[in-house]
Length: 213
Image (cartoon, rainbow, N blue to C red; front, side):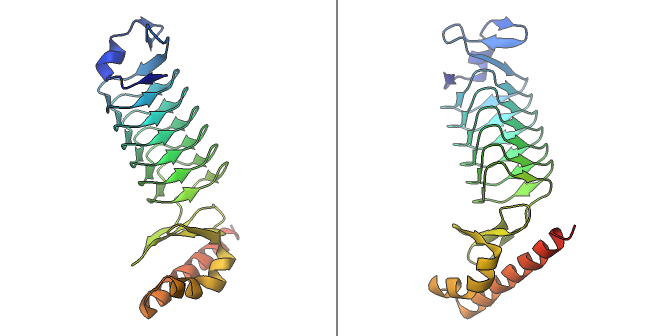
């Protein structure tokens, strides 16, 4: 594990079989051309970073992680060990990705999102900010994500049966029964109550279609 090393620091280490090896810690890292690493970043041994990648300050990357070329990772992001991130992916600041996850090429993940360990997300998916996706889930499409007048509403399971609005994550059936009461308790206006009820109705119709496929 290395901490707060620049790209030039890493490239100054001895190279053995394509790996840059830190003479002090024996940490070994592969790093492509034109890569940028922000300050206060921690990178685990065995990590491979592709060319043209940008890693923001304060990011923590676990060991034996693979980051594809052209990827952009925001500041203060955490990526668990053994995770594979495809080329051209964008990950927002403050996002946390658990170990042994797989993120497909071209995927866009917003800020402050949490993706559990072992989760697989297909290529070119879009996941909004603030979403929580549990462990061991496989997404082969982009989750539906709506930015409303107060909070976002998003699918957090591929079957569409679990929905998150703001910080509240509940089954779709719960939302169908309680969306108006919940909105009233959070001081939504009458128009906003109807707005979010319509969103839940949309999610319900989408889930019905998904589960027929």
